[in-house]
Image (cartoon, rainbow, N blue to C red; front, side, top):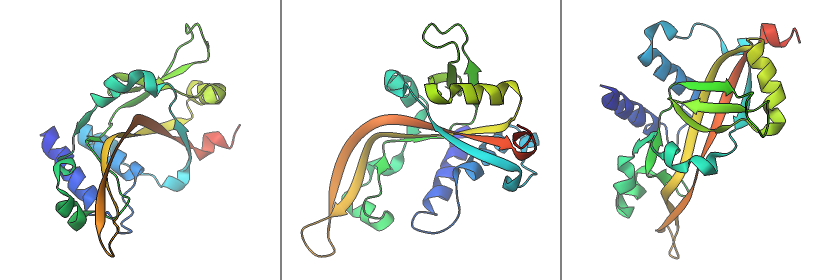
Length: 196
């Protein structure tokens, strides 16, 4: 069932490529949350929240663990001709797709390097840490219960990409590889944020 659900989401995302369809991280994450827990269906407006995005640090040490969170992207096996029919130039087609559904920020006061450290755990996997310069701020948000929801985005790894060829209206297939990286998005209730 979960695999079928992921495939439906993947098709929905692909149908938006090259269009202004408004499919975004928050909508995706809310969809996943409702799938896992129907009672989590969103009822409030995004205007009720302040949004912060944090790039997760330390992911270079946890590449294998992060990769385990992904599922094979069937589009990665497409030929150059097939990619030309489906994708825009410079659009990276990654080997793995990621659908994080449970994101936790866990304080780590026993951390010998930084007692304010906050580790990021996605679907039970430790993927990295909130950057040191943001830890005090995020720790305060956690302790004062100001974060209403947390979402995550994972990207990177091996990819294919169409690039302009030497001839007019032709493309070459470029291949590359990059480290996996993670970004978390914190939704902070305006009512509590404005009281600080």
